Length: 138
Image 1 (tube, rainbow, N blue to C red):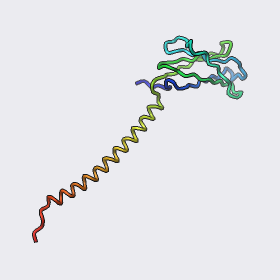
Image 2: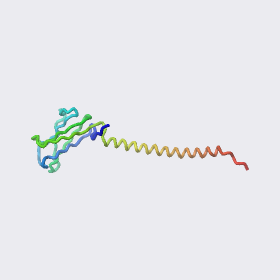
Image 3: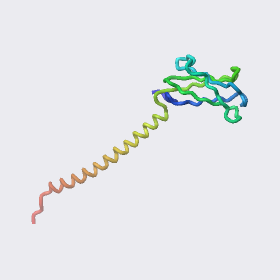
Image 4: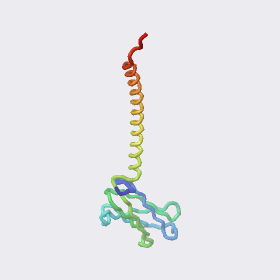
């Protein structure tokens, strides 16, 4: 099972650092490409909005299928292009970790139940020992 970093149906934040941390840009976008490599025609380009006056621009999209999604980010004139791949699956690192933690909790419950049964077995063995021991003659 290959590691997936993002989950189908969950929003992904896309970041873009403009060249030379250029601030105040209008029309910074991320073009979204499907795992097939086709431009996602049902999904418009994502407008990226600047955080403060940092030259860092952000936006979000939500993948609706598994695979390797691609975001091509650039300024309005097409300059400063960068590309990032997003590995999307039916699970991701966080959901696998959550399931492992839940299983760990269940395992602790099973261990506690077994410990309780061990104590009950000890009690039963003690009672059987008393039954098996012949009475002492006086």
